[in-house]
Image (cartoon, rainbow over all chains, first blue to last red; front, side):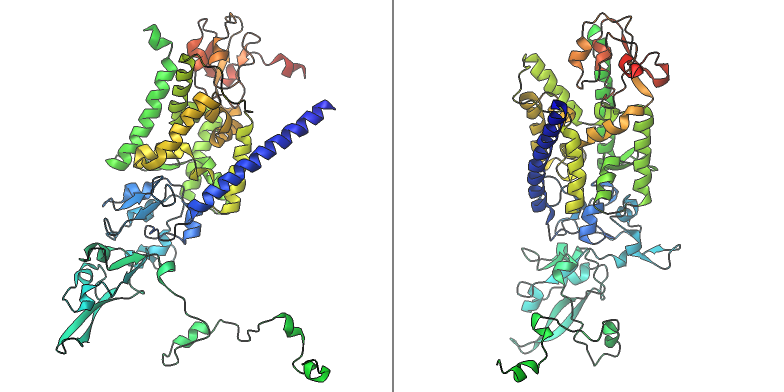
Length: 260
Length: 274
């Protein structure tokens, strides 16, 4: 009898201590997990899955020939032990062999996301990397002031595709052009060479994770003037209905019942 | 010379622990291909994958499958410790062992047997269970995010940052709060290897006939795994034995030695009776 009593008491004590410890632990982790603006190596899977799959081994960091990747240390304000870039200091040089992605043992960095071709005979293509997206602050960019500068455009490894220069009339002088850089999301790899090259005090072009930098267009609108845009909504179910508590009632009921 | 003989396994363990860390450090800093990565996952000689099976278990708990490279690495490490070396990761590889051994030496020198708390050694199995439960709940490998082991080896290999705080905390916990507190009571990685370490080939063997029951081995053992001392000839069978060899080097009677499981001649009489 006392044996059983002691056993149950011990179990209850253990469980109680475990719950206390667990709650403190969860509270700590929940604060640490969220780090929205961290820029992952090429081929990183979507951030939530990345955080689950990365074992914090640092093989990608050791593999980077330019020592651009950093492994987050405790106190760096990023998920500890995971790799990230600081583009203003050391951007990604877009190696063709993508050694960081290729060496990842867990699949948190997935070579299929940076490869062309069918399964079985894939060829690595670093241009498919989507580390982030370069975003321009037109208010601090001196090119948009009308001063001649094309530092980011010249630094871009995907020049004329990821960054183009759009000439526009300079209304202030009436006789000069404003040569403003424009980033195109379908080609920008987020390598960060532009951010490093930017001449302003704090970079006026900078890389943000795509999920932060980009919006998402609605299925309810198409560009009718573009032949292919309608295809985008082909798989969307046509008869979308919104159900609310009122939906049960027929529109004519209240007229007949006179409870207006 | 007697000093060295009385600490021969401790010295050897330090050599192994520091060599492993140094090779990892050189793997990152200089590009040596002997060991690259860290204790979570790594590449040996640039070819053989190695991975921490407990990390992988936490990743599985999040509902994530890892690539074959990591699976193979985890399998190799698990097989090595389960079949050959027992829980020797804790005594021979883990860098936190250097810290906790130091804590034990310091508090022993200060004559301190009085610690602030008593704690069950089974707490670590609760922490192991919690690690997996929280991994499933939060979708991240829960222990890896707070692990002082990770903070220390990753700190040495890739840069310490604020990681020293948890290492100092472990040291002070062991000195002031619970004797062998971290490695023997809390660490879920140690608990994991305790669960898999009971069947390994390499064991500490004891000879009752040579033993004079001075009990130095029992006093120095970081785990209570020596019930056989002075009672029967046989092997230390508990998975919680870290194969640190401390009992062997402190024994003045040569009644302890490393050996293989199959050399066991007698078993626990109680076990045989039942």
